[in-house]
Length: 206
Image (cartoon, rainbow, N blue to C red):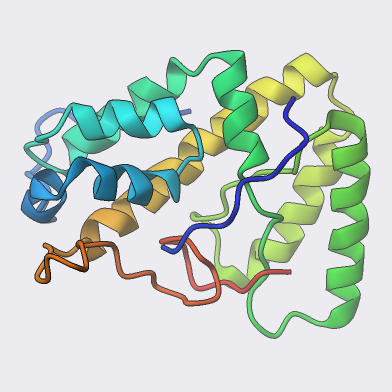
């Protein structure tokens, strides 16, 4: 497991594709037509596996968001142990809703430290389906529950959460990706929060 952490970039079981679903309203033309290195950097903010990001960038164009998400899921399932270690090493600590009280930060920091000491990587969990006010309870409950897992079992769960995190991040990325307008300033996603450093939900770092 790599001991280093990637620098933060500017800028979440995969769900089965729904048959007969209406085409996604998200326009992917800017994403499909942007330079490969621009798209790759943006995708690395969604999942910090270089092979994963390159695979998605190289397989453009995608007809719609559902196709892009399906490709992201497939690429995530194909992550090797080394790829997974790389992606986990690039993850930040879990974020809390703005205004969470200081005692919550203390409890969460202690739980994160215990988890990282046991498994050698940060705790990852997707809270996209929960109200921001419930995020802290979900994260703390998740850490405490998963601390009892053996390392192999936990790695499977961590990979699952990474796939779910990447899925949500890609959805937000696709909605905010812009076509380059200045040759000296290639197109890039507009992050929803300047604090998060990712195309994530509006949480703030712990």
